[in-house]
Image (cartoon, rainbow, N blue to C red):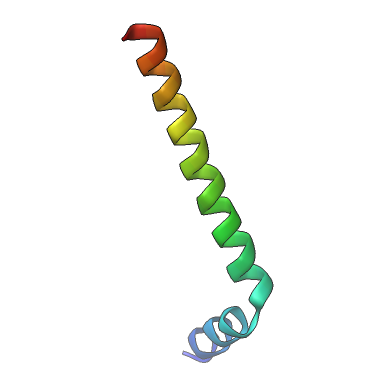
Length: 44
């Protein structure tokens, strides 16, 4: 119970974790879009 209250607070206060997560999600979406585009270009 103590851990559950400490960990989310540190994660919420950290801007770096949020920024890194946002960049990771954007990169993942970009890779997915590139893969779909390549698949459509090759097989379409």
